[in-house]
Length: 379
Ligand SMILES: Cc1ncc(COP(=O)(O)O)c(C=O)c1O
Image (cartoon, rainbow, N blue to C red):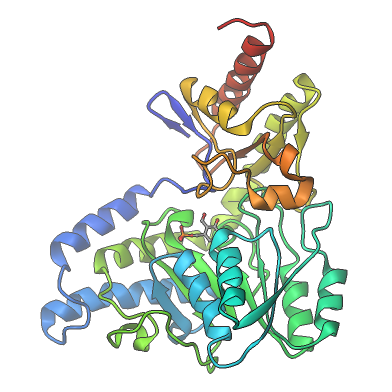
């Protein structure tokens, strides 16, 4: 996808909102600005957008609308799922360093607060959590929650979420799956999970809205305390205009996996071109991977410098998760796979539905220009 003369290849950080989404948000902001909790006609008009978004997310997740709690995004959904699991009972939380910070940091906080003991899973060289180690962790006993992601935000590697959920349930534990990078991109492998997280902006919806999909009867406990919105699970006035956008995006996302599958040949061609010309470059993570994402290490090259140089060439990519971009810290998830030194030279290129073959050529030629300019000392 070309933004002006630029190429946007950072779809894992966020996706460009669809025109229909922007239109729906703008229309609702003008016409449905009332408080969705108000019982008068104006409030009901706003409420209709909220309930429509809930229905659309429920259809995407294959659940009843009552099982959808709207949140500000996947960060809040992950916090709600993890904190809920340890609100009434203590125990072991099994998770891994592959997780997004909105899971990993919560796990660390729960441990600091004395609510959970965290058992970090081994990472398989292919970039997945190690299921044998999960079985071992479950056998150690007292596991209350297993939290894994469906698709890695860094490498695109599809995690064995279905197996992890099965093993957790067999051992009597709860299972949470962070599906922020999966909804609308790959087929859902976490249908049986007790809780699943979704972010509107990863599926071409607006930022600032997402959802926790939760099995009925789970007894979620709110993180925030306040009003009765979202059945008291997520107090605070919801923005009906963001909900309107989420509804449009979530409906369209049902056909997303087919659209994303068509990106794989472009991604594969890009990887072949890069590895073919820059012999030391190495693609991280083995199949199965989501079709659009590549994490590539360029030994000896600081990832953030490559990102900055590519930016000057008009190409937007990332050196790790967006949250860690701008800091010198390499991505913890990539470091867990290949060690901190190699992780410091990682580049994440994530394509999207609108990426063209010409865009991929631009990315490759910009990368070659940067690397070869520096190698030959040309400014
Ligand atoms: C796997 C994963 N989980 C959670 C999040 C957080 O989502 P949000 O930005 O909606 O809070 C992200 C966003 O980068 C993500 O990639």
